Length: 231
View (cartoon, rainbow, N blue to C red):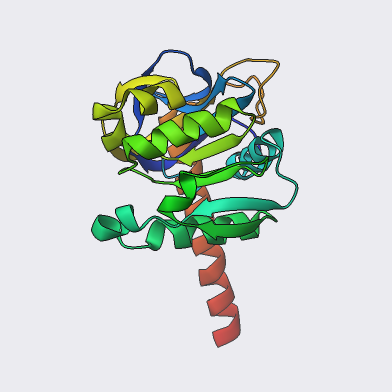
């Protein structure tokens, strides 16, 4: 899927009820998928699911464009959170690092305390930072207001429950419902969107049939090849 709409199996811990955030793409159940939140002189971008896993090609392009929009040329800051690692290990950092490198970026590792003193114009990527502290959220608000850029992969769901700064930073009111299922990923028709999209109607049933037909064709071709070789 080089452009949205797209179909696939997605999972995530989303944020819900945008307040100041502008939604650029959404899932078939109306859950926001990609959103931006202008804050002072800077901006926050949210990919509201595990966007670094089993992702349509359109999302690879959207991530490149999102980081470019935040001012990235090649280098980005990437959080490796010890706060998260206590519960989730360091795999979120490792997955995001591999994705960013594949997209052509050079990630520089930062730690939790580094968030408190962020400055400059290099954007920071925060992968699945569910346990973001209120102090970190406040520091990120200041960083973004001063012209910085922050990009979240999946929603910081626990922070949203008790941090007004986190709600202000992301421009959402609350955490949503976890999902792990087949979904449609649909674009908002916005001229200012960095998400590749076109006007096209698709359905889960129709796309599932296409995938099953393709899988069966591949199996048939392998069977024919094996038959030819074994003769």
